[in-house]
Structure formats: structure tokens, C-alpha cells
Length: 164
Image (cartoon, rainbow, N blue to C red; front, top):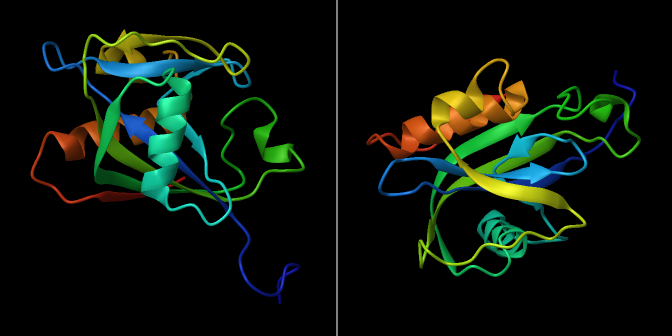
């Protein structure tokens, strides 16, 4: 018997895996709430499909830069215990989350990117090894998601499934 009988309650989020064609660097945004660097993206609205969430969130976080959402790279089941920022697992609003990561292309690689200052500190192109290093700018769950998205994107693999 569980202490939460009935149907599962969880949230959904989508992330945008965007790389530069010339050097393969990945675009990350510096999140104010966590203080960490993450893929652009965020939580789904009520009844919003993951691809639409990715399009909406990436467009919002990159200041309206024109982009296209491509194929699904990663489906990541993140438990409530995933410590995405200090205290996250103990937060009242913490639920397990299904995060989808899509390959996203900027229509104009030279488009001006402006981030919402109330949500993000800024953005930057990162080398994969630097971004996902154990002492790097990302926390471990998001770093693992990024590494997996990279592997799937640059291979003939189908989407990957992860669990935190």
C-alpha cells in the first residue's frame, strides 16, 4: 500500500539542444533560480504537448530568436529526489518530472539572443566537455541529459531513455 493511492501526479518539461555548426558548441542559459547553466526550456502548460513546450520555452528564453524544433533526443524521467538546485527535492511544489529534449535549430545562427532578465542571467556557447565536467557549470542530472542528447544527435540512434 502506498501513501499516495490513485493516478500518478508529475510535471512535464522540455529542453532545446542547440549546437553551433562550425564548432559544435552547445547553447546553455544561466538560470537565476538554480544558479546553474542549463539547456533552454522549461515546464509545460496545461495540456501542452512536449514539442510545443520546447518551441514556446526556447523562443521565450532566447528572446524570440527564430528556431525550429526537430527530433526527440531524450526522454528523461526525473524523480522528485533529483536535486536540480539546492533544496529542490524538499520544495513543496516538487513532483517527479518527465523531461523531453529535442534537437533545435536556430533559423539564423547569427540572430540576436536576449534572455528574460527576471528568469535568466545570460546565455553562452559551451564546449560539451567543459559544460558537463564534474566540477563544471551544470548539476549532474542536467549534465547527463546533455551528454545523452549529444550522443543521440550525432549518431544514428533513436531517442534515449534516462531515469534519475
